[in-house]
Image (cartoon, rainbow, N blue to C red):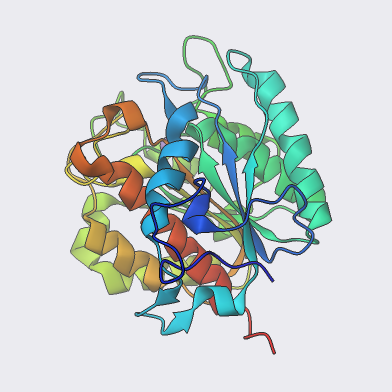
Length: 318
Ligand SMILES: [Mn+2]
C-alpha cells in the first residue's frame, strides 16, 4: 500500500518531486490508482509547452495533504496510489506518439488489473490514446465527462486530422466513446461557426455550455452529469482552459469567462460514486503561468480531487 511522505515527518520542500510526495514506481501492480505524466504537446494549435506540465504540477503538488475535509476521508487510507513517472513520447510525431502512448497505457492497465490512471498532460491530444487503451483493456467503450472551453470535435486543422482540437471526433469515429452516456461541460469562448458546439451534439454528446451550467447552477449541473453517465464506466477529462484565465492563465488556448476555482471544486465534489476508469488534466503550460504558479497549483489540486473520486468508490482497507 503506497502513500505519500507526510509533511509532519519531513518538510514538504524536501526531496525529489513526485506527485503529492508519493513513491515513484515503475511497476503499478500494487496501485489502485497511479499518476502518470504524458508530456506530449505536438498536437497544440496555438501555444505549445504542455510537455513541461507534469514537472510543474508535480513540483507544486508537494503542498497536498491526504485528508479530504469535504468528503471526510483520508484518500490514502482508502487507496494505494503511486507516481509512475512519465510515458515516452516522440515530439513532432503525433500519430506515432499516439501509438506509443496507447501501448504503454495498456501495459499499465494490465499490470494494475484496471488501476485508475490520473494522467498529467500534455495537450488534449493525449485523450485519444487514453481512450484507445481503455477500450483495448476493457473490450468496451467508455462514457466521457469532458470539461473544456472547447468541444474538440472539429474534423481537422489545416488538413491534419490528429490535433488537440479534433481527437474527440476521431475517438467517436473509432467507436471508443459511449456517447449516449457522455457529456461536454463548460463550453465557452469565440467560435469559428454557429455549429461549433452543435457538432458535438450531432456526434452524440450531450452538451452544457458554461452559460447554461451557470444558469442551472452547480447542483443542477452535477445532477445533469450524473443522470447522463448513470452506471456506465466513465473517463473524466478536464482541460484547464475550462477555467477562467484569472484562475488558470497558463494554458494554450485561453478563453475568458470560465469557471472559478470554487465552482470547479464543487462540481467535482458532487461527482462521487460514478464508475471511474481514468482521469486526465491537460493543457497546462507552465511558461505562461502566473505568479505563484497558480495554474499548476490549481491543476495539482484538481488531480487531488480526482484521487478522492477514486477513493470514494473503494471501501477502506482493513
Ligand atoms: Mn481541450
